[in-house]
Length: 207
Image 1 (cartoon, rainbow, N blue to C red):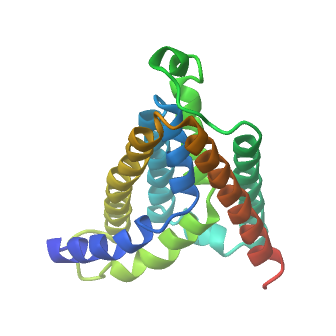
Image 2: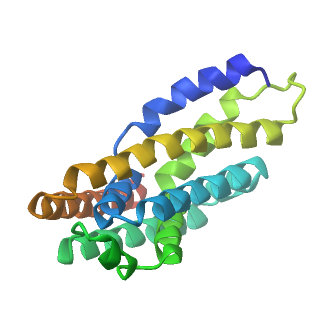
Image 3: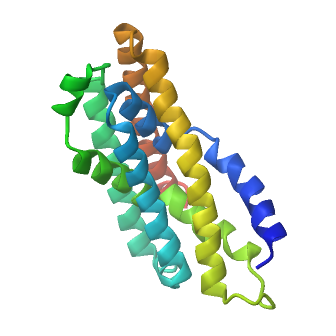
């Protein structure tokens, strides 16, 4: 795979990375919590690494070709997003002092939630399945699985920069504004619930 192909895919993928969605909402909520940003972003990235491996290994094609498995993935992802969104509406995240943030949740909890947000996101799965293969080449020196994995990691690297900016930016902007932070947290919760409903409607009522 040539460097020009990777660069072109990177520019193409940025359009999707910069589109707000569940990942953005979760990164913003992590920023409001103060110390959860690093672990949450790493969790989001871990989910994308797993998706990259699944697509490269050919598992993604098998899942996409099975309507029942896709429906199960969609329902699981929608339910998890709705659960997180409900939690943010009921108890919107507010800025913490460093000592309070240490008791607000463990590093592993933030990491696990981030991984589930991205790993169970059918929209992300479809993106990897639909947009990675067209950038591969049968004549490249790398094998197709290696090319798919490389493309997935390029996308993940872009996410690492953008989501870190979103999370730490939210932290800087909202640290001293608890009232605004609550509103933003509730809005993020509404976004997650809305995305969950859209996933279910698209899966079961538009086919």
